[in-house]
Image 1: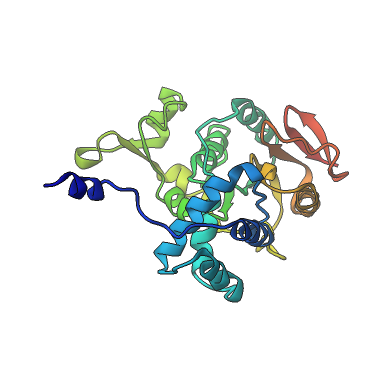
Image 2 (image 1 turned 90 degrees about the vertical axis):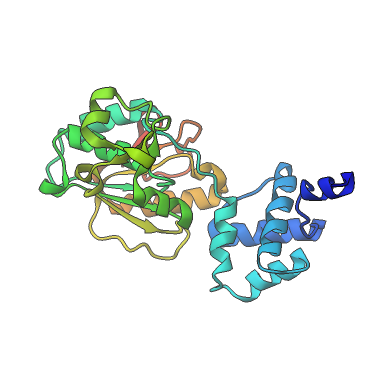
Length: 280
């Protein structure tokens, strides 16, 4: 085999190139649809994603690809477009102090307890919430419910499966790992699956927080909205926070990400602890 032939095998895939107008248009489309704000420093990433998606749908130019989105608000490609720009950085017991506070909080709440995790990602946070509720005596048997939503359809599908590598569940204490997770065998060795005692509490849905209405039944004792507001502008953050307040029960809690500060964005909540707010 010649050197040219070898080089062609390992050559990087050829994607349609992006021009400045493509970047600007993409940013506007994404913000309008999903609220996600992309900065100038993301241009290289945006170009790669747009080129890959354009090629995936057999478009010769990124302009044509963006035309497809703009002219077809109900197109299936919107799902892939948004998924490509979402960030699914999550972990079991991330920001552990939140779950310590949740455990103390739900011990004093009357059943049934209801929680909304509105940035569910691939499920690690959701099942940590479920585990915390179970440890405090709240399970599906006494009505405990977790509504787990995310805009990323692929992430939600993975979360529903509740299957993780042993490396992913390292933050889970060994005794709770034995109680709430089933170890895989054979071809599934090295993997674990969340047991029904936790999974039965959770209802997963795809949801865009910018949707004009949310299909909510009843009110929640707590809302987990962690590490998602940082991708929205201040106006969008304030609007979402004001919509959270009416769907929380009196004295309900709102859990935010470690780098998020809602104190000056709304009067609907007041700070209770480290990145934890209570409905005013």
